[in-house]
Amino acid sequence: MRAGANETERVTLRAYRPNRVDVRELFALAAPVVLVQIGLMAMGAVDTIMVGRVSAVGLAAVAIGSRDSTRINLVTMLHSLVAS
Image (cartoon, rainbow, N blue to C red; front, side, top):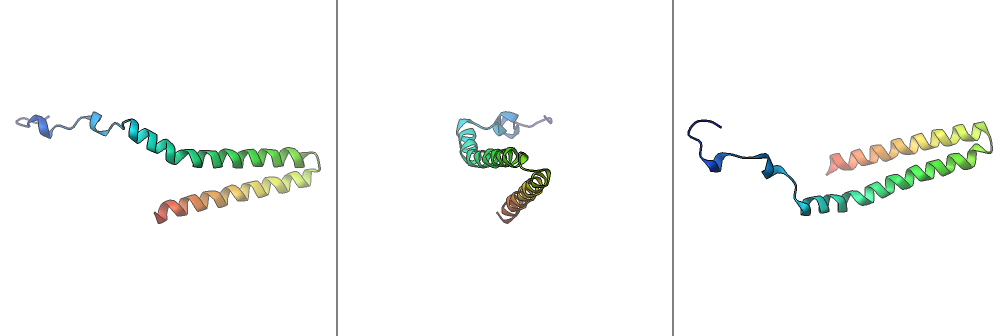
């Protein structure tokens, strides 16, 4: 703190610490996104398990489709972040 500064000019890190309401609102916003991501991962795992019994070519096709859908989801999320 510089010489001559009074107590009102001093800002502590506690002023930036989120309180319970902030954390609750953050979790309320994040929960649907987390659930969708878990669902997409589970769907990819089930697809892989089901097609893995058929053929190697089918498994490769599912892997490519899963990769592409992940890229599309990522681009869509980034676009919505930039647009907001």
